[in-house]
Length: 147
Image (cartoon, rainbow, N blue to C red; front, side, top):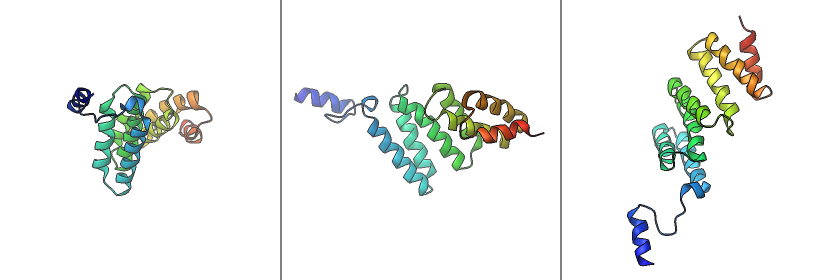
């Protein structure tokens, strides 16, 4: 048993620790910590926390969700380019994920702001096709009906 503990410590995992893919609470705690840091204006610390969780188990549901949260963080700190990239990453990794309607809606709004109405129309049409009754449906309809 002592040899097993030594092996676990060498790998950086404390004895009895559960890997993140089997312990979603660890991810939830990291997200809450990131949100606290965001609330305190510590955007870089929040970004580092989410990136660390994303890199721990890159193919996990938690890592994919972190991409969405990183998009929101980038948007909150005024970096529309990074926000757009993270929302696109999330949608590429989790096209039907929990946050897909919000990610596509935020992508649409940023596209309108940064790239103009023409690009926003393409995203708006996709949004309505996929999430016709979603929270951004009124905005998508407005974008499609604008000159």
